[in-house]
Image (cartoon, rainbow, N blue to C red; front, side, top):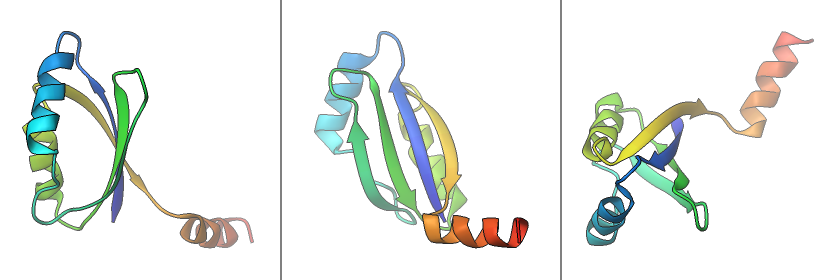
Length: 91
């Protein structure tokens, strides 16, 4: 399953979060595959797309950054799957 993590650096943590990111690269833990990461230029917001079936790995990744970053996690599906669901729902 894919999850989109919308994140923003918590107030007062920009420098610490930047240093932590530059030091580690924020890799996904074992059990998750990092599909992409995007940063809002000049902002404190961004998005990370991960894939995996291990909810504990997702919780581990969020917990690792929770002191610096606020997260919103949304399970996501691609257009093809959404189209199939909509076709069944509105057929």
